Length: 136
Image (cartoon, rainbow, N blue to C red; front, side, top):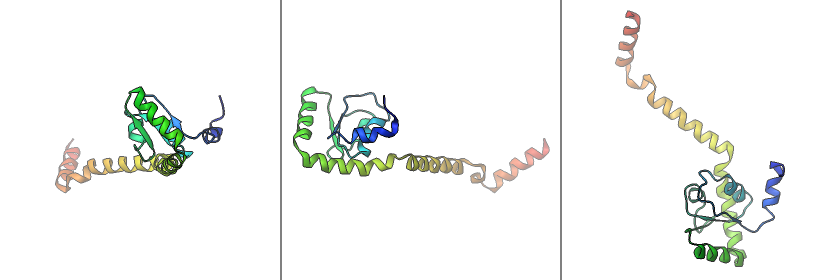
């Protein structure tokens, strides 16, 4: 175990990040690796496949072990490719920053509230509603 704020230092010691998980819905470990400019090798699945852009920020493999090993070998042998993908991964990781994701979520909630608020139903609806409340 290590303090969370030390994690980036440890991740940045690596050359790439590899995960064979197929059950990550929102793969925080992948996002953390991308934020430290590591290219990612993962298996095409929900979560990892939504986060890693195949051929840009890393590689997405089929579950086939030979295909996975071939992509891993390619990343291990090609330092220029790792650097290029790592830089792209670092750039893309910004969209997962808490400030950005919070802003996006708030905007979506506000839009939903506005779209379904009673004032969107028109003046006639609001007046009828008001008169019914006054009668009661």
